[in-house]
Length: 104
Image (cartoon, rainbow, N blue to C red):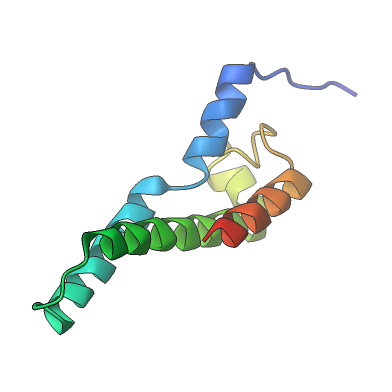
């Protein structure tokens, strides 16, 4: 049985890319816009930061679980992604998702 070797750097980058941070940041900004539109007289900037962080982590949690669920499709359509490429195992991705969800 042949094992693929992945450099530590490429595995590290996979842990970042599986989060899809841009999607989470966009979700956070949308949530902040909703807060501003609903309460324009009371803008608390610390709350805005927490909302962006929470939305980013919730979105990232969902993205990881989506990658786990779609792993068979991704073997064909996106073999470069972290799970189908073997850089992150399914078990590790689920644990990572739980940690990200708890942080959220």
